[in-house]
Image 1: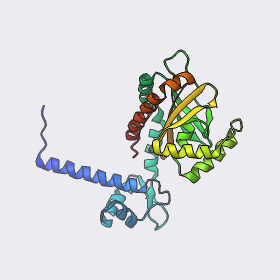
Image 2: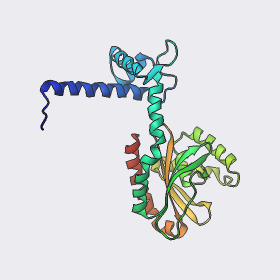
Image 3: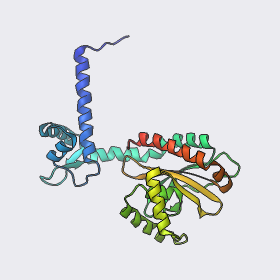
Image 4: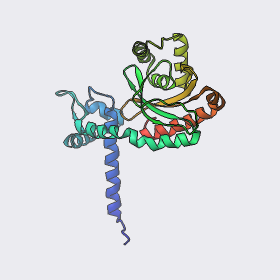
Length: 259
């Protein structure tokens, strides 16, 4: 059966899409603003009339997507949206898993997924390589930030002052891996911020090198993907692994909705 939309139906759909887009703009304006914004501030940020913003915010309040920040001090992201975000966050690893498998199939080496926890990078997923000799680590293992590819990639997501604080936390949590050359590390992070690639030339573990990238996920957390390999294979494939990860980073940025 064929269903045809009338001009009036199409007009209604168009208006509905516009309303959704405007509501999304309001929510994006409130992203990362725990103290909230006033209606006037939101209106200026997204380029809409204050009266329009007021109507959108009223609808979002009804759905519990935004809530009053402080009495008479504007609004912030509400618990309804936070519940949806928490549900997506819990499934994030499962959603990303097939993409990691595809990357492993492309390069043939182990692919790791890790997140920031305190002063450590924690593995939350791993796809073993297809070679007889591969680099493997257990899910849940904590690695230093300052001397690993995934850790350096995570550090590069932060401003220099914040990264410096995390470096101190990393050194404190992993005293078995003292910082050998702080100036060199800071130069590496500057390079990673420009080129988006972080390297561990057998710095963390003898015989294993790695390359990593990181992006910030929809919840404002850095997420790192790294490829470790025995030194002899890594040195031979370094450029190819780097290209594969940079390409994967673009896909990942699109996936998490980050610029």
